[in-house]
Amino acid sequence: MYVQVLESFKREGTQVVSSELLARTCNVNPSQIRKDLAYFGEFGVRGVGYHVQDLITAIKRSLGVDRMWKCALVGVGNLGKALLRHREFKYRGYDIVAAFDCDPFKIGEEVTGLEVVCTRRLKETARDLDIEIGLITTPPDRAQRAANFLTEAAIKGIINFAPARITVPADVHVEYVDFFHHLYAVSFSITLDQRPKAQTVGD
Image 1 (cartoon, rainbow, N blue to C red):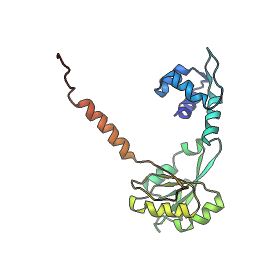
Image 2 (cartoon, rainbow, N blue to C red):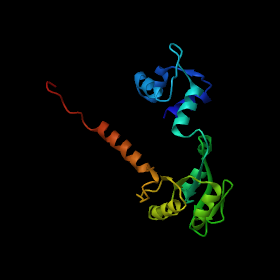
Image 3 (cartoon, rainbow, N blue to C red):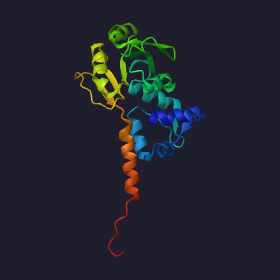
Image 4 (cartoon, rainbow, N blue to C red):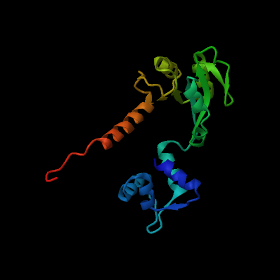
């Protein structure tokens, strides 16, 4: 979150930001900002603030995103194509260098300069291109199969956009992106706000 906010400041031309402004933008209190940023080193000048680029560099180094990560996408449907066309991935250090699908009608298709390759060639392609992260955008019933191909290719990080849980070896890190979780959270919050407030004693 800090990186995203700081990069927004950078795009706007802001070179120095106060902990108060950074806290308001991130919706946390200033003391929390100072505590969190202390983990990344000695930053900030009393009465002046934080140098935006220095903070971005330090946080990215700590997160391991101060270099380019090569990624493979499995499942070139509507969501997969949308992610392939998303320019922000490369800007943030994630380069999708290969796209895979098992549908013979999609294999050979070109999307944003990438030829869709059969998933059976994932292992050799991952080795040749030094791919480290896999993105799963398949239908839910194909997610485990996609995960199997990725883990067989020795890929240690998976982002699963499919609404299905997958089983992977213990040394493979998985993050789930389920849009419905966020929709449920928003609808629940709205529902709570619309419920009659409980009356307090004396009302």
